Every structure is written in C-alpha cells, then in structure tokens.
Amino acid sequence: MRSTMQETPLSIATLVRYGTSVHGSSEVVTWTGEGARSATYAEVGRRAARLAHALRALGVRGDDRVGTFMWNNQEHLEAYLAVPAMGAVLHPLNIRLFPDQLAFIADHGGDKVVLVDGSVLPLLAKVLGQLPQVQHVVVNGPADLSVLEGTSATVHAYEDLLDGQPDEFDWVDPDDETDAAAMCYTSGTTGNPKGVAYSHRSIYLHSMQVCMSDGFAMGQRDRVLLIVPMFHVLAWGTPYAAMMSGASLVMPDRFLTPEPLADLIETAKPTLAGGVPTVWTALLAYLDQTPRDMSSLRDVVVGGSACPRSLMEGLERHGVHVTHAWGMTETSPLGSISREPGGVEGEDAWRYRITQGRLAASVQARLVGPDGSVVPRDGTAVGELEVRGPWITGSYVRDDDPAKFDDGWLRTGDVGSITPDGFLTLTDRSKDVIKSGGEWISSVALENALMAHPAVAEASVVGVPDEKWGERPLATVVRREGTEVGADELRAFLAVRVAQWQLPERWSFVDEVPKTSVGKFDKKVIRRQYADGALDVQTLP
Ligand code: ADP
Picture 1: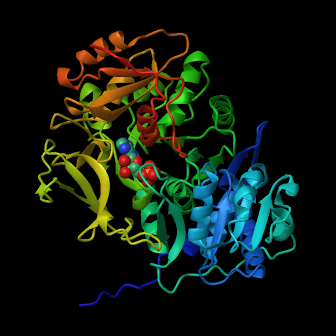
Picture 2: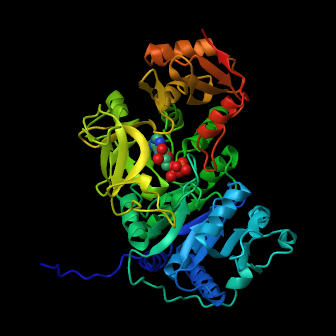
C-alpha cells in the first residue's frame, strides 16, 4: 500500500524561504577585528536573492558549481543560501590547503564561478592559472586586485554585482531531492582529498538531527558561534540547521586566535559553539592566563578528533560545558554525540562523556573485525566502524573508491567499540593504530592520558618502526609555557594510567605539533619527520 502523504521534496529552498521569513528577525553577526557588524535573516534573504540573480546573469545554470574561498562571515552565509536554493551546487574551498591541493580540488569540483574574500585573494590568485574552467571571480571586501593581473577570468566586486538586483528570487525546489546541493572535500588527513556531494535531502534531514535535543539542541533562542570553518563539512551543517531552527549565527571571520575569539564571545554572547579540540585548547590556555566572561556559552560541541577529558574539565573551570561528538566529511558530519543518560551524574557521567557518543537513529553502525566478520556491540570487542544512512555518502565525486565501501556500508577507517546502548568509543584510525608485538596500542588513549598532565599543552602519539616489536609509540609533546617537564616524569605519570607495555620509550619535545588544514594533529607529517631524522628524539631505557 502506498502512503497518502504528499511528496514535496526536502530542499534548501524550503529552508531559505522559512529561515529568512519566519525567523527574519534572527541575525548573523560578523566580527570585524574591532567590533561586530550584523544583519537580520530577512536582510540576508534579500541579499541572497540579489546574489542568485547576479549569478544567473553570470551564466550559472543547472547544477553548475560555485566555489567559495571565504572565512566564516555574512557574505559566505549568503552564498550558502543562494547557490543551492537557485539549483546550483555550493563548493566551499579550503583556504588553508597547499596551492596544488587547492587547484586539484577546484578543478576536480569543476567550479565555474568563485566567490573570494579580499583578504585571501592572493592565495587564490596563485592557483587561478591552473583553473581554466573558472570564468568569474567575485571579490568580497577590500582587496589588492593587482594580484589578479593576467587572469583570464572576469573579476567583479561582490557589492557591485548585488547592486540593483531584485530583492526576491523564485527559489528552486529540485525535481529530485537527492540532487546535489553542496560539496566538500575531505581534509586529506590520511590521503588525497575526496569529494563528497551532499543532497538537498541529506542536508535537510541532517539539520533536523542538529536541532534535536540530543543533537546540538539548537533552537531559535540560540546564538551559535561558528568556529568550524565553513569549508569543513559545511561548518558541520550548522548554517542550514540555523535556517531550520531560527538560531542566530555569530561569525569570527578571520579572527580565530584566542584573544579576538574571547572578545567576540563577550560582545556577541553566543550560547552554543562547535570546533576541533586544538582551537579550544588554545582558547583554554589563554583563559587560564586571562580570565574572560564565557558565561553566555551553555554548550560547546567538540569533535573532529578525540576530545581529551582534561580539555573538557579545563573549559568547565571557566563555566563552559563541553559535549563530545564524532563525525566525518562523509557523514555530513554528525554521527554520534555524547550526552550522558538521564539520572547519571558525577564520575559516572564521565564514563559516557569521554566516549565519542551515542549513535543517531539515522546512523546505522556495525564493527567489522580484521577477518571481515561483524564483531559484537558489547563495549569490549574492537573493530572498524562501518556506517550507513540517509546523510552518509555512498560514493565519492568522480572517484569510485571501492575499498572505502563494504556491501553498501561506508568504511570509516576508525577503530573502536560500541556498547549495547549505542555509545561509540574510538581507539584510533586504522592508519594510526600502533601494533606492538601483535598487540594494539591506542594512540588516542596515550594522548588523552598525556594531555591530563598540567605541564603538557599538546601531545601526539604515533607508531614508529621498532626492530624488536615491529612498532612502538613515539610521543611528541609541546610543553606549556614556563614549564620544564621531561620524559622521565611524563612516563612515570603515564605508568599509573596505562599498561606498562604500552609506555613510550621514544620522546620528542617540540614547539608545535604539526596540524592539518582544519587543525587536527597531522600524524603523517610526524611519522615523516621521524623517518627523516628531523625530530630530536630521546629514548628512555
Ligand atoms: P579527514 O579525514 O581528512 O581528517 P574529516 O574531517 O572528515 O577529514 O575527518 C573525519 C575523521 O576525524 C574521522 O574519521 C575520525 O578519524 C576523526 N574524528 C572525528 N571526530 C572524532 C572524535 N570525536 N574522536 C576521534 N576521532 C574523531
């Protein structure tokens, strides 16, 4: 029997119409370095309509790709709304990639028009010569246009382009809700970047999960601080969830270091935020020196890499509650989020809070052992996590990578266990697992334990070749400013927290742990530095 329900498509157009009218008085606030500028969603809706008309005039049709090379700001939000809601495909480009990777991604994505912030125009200019398909470059804000000399693309100023265009656009619902609305590339932590195309349907459903009370619990009373770059997994889907819920958005633009972030938080008073651990680690170090008013924040969702308990406790000293979540570019990204069950408190709550969290209803998961068989979800057995569901990718853009899929399931490359009540604990990425004498050592567990030491600012653990054991852990540590801790003391600190045979012999004290373009520890680089002899390594007996 067929249902009698209407089949109106789930679409970004619906979210834009709703968010910019019903929630027309919600606002987007953008930090300028000295203060904040703001616009209501009604204004943003009108400006998005003008942008859509302007893009049509430039020849954007059908599912043409429109690239953005921008910080988190109001104009980027306008592109987020206009491009998919006019039927084209939004492609946020990662500002922090190396020129070659950037050229690869923009070319592979087929971007026809690129919207770019003036402050990062020189970075884009470096690769434009390799991108013949880019016909138009639209520059937002003040810029030195001389860097574009010799480019074959036509250059426009964002505001000039919008000027005189109509305030309304007949937003387009796709014929098929599974059509692409936007695409992002993986940040390439473990290999070449791969494109993921999000559909209108997947973004709509994912937004509902973000708004759910056991998701980010995002509602119209919230003001959401968007630290996650808008080129990283669509800013974790937050802008679209904001259209759905009416939550206001607070955008840091390019001011991402701790002090301006603290200024922005004190001025714009966000209630909710998200970001990778390294951003919060830096903010915490600053707050410990210079206490600031963080009281507006009711919750901060931390994910993208494992969030150590010490970071959660540290931020909570400043009154900021942290919720740990797991996801990936391929999963839109929300896969699991860690909220302790009702009635569980104190130390018991921590048992749940440090996990990667409970899987969402729409995220089906299983664990697969090395022999390909499914292992039980008993909280103990460990396997590679495989997931499937309506906002999980089933393939990559123009790149079938059969090794990443297993009978319709996405192989996440993450290794861990799941409890019978659905809490996921990750011990590693399969590429980062350390295999010592046939036993697995969890680099994440060692890192979390090390970062609990008061003198440790950051710690990353990788496996390095060892004659006797095959592989052994190498700990790279950044000391907190003004501290003098050494390898002996740190090993003794670990010795009461992890099994004796897992204790690293090799230690290297560094000024900074290398990071990827989205701020995660870059273990590929650490392993290479070790192999090249570029690290100063101390070996304990
Ligand atoms: P990349 O794979 O290039 O880093 P993504 O941002 O898509 O790009 O990264 C997804 C990966 O990040 C996951 O597969 C997982 O390894 C890691 N990750 C995300 N959240 C967490 C978390 N809470 N704990 C541990 N690892 C995480």
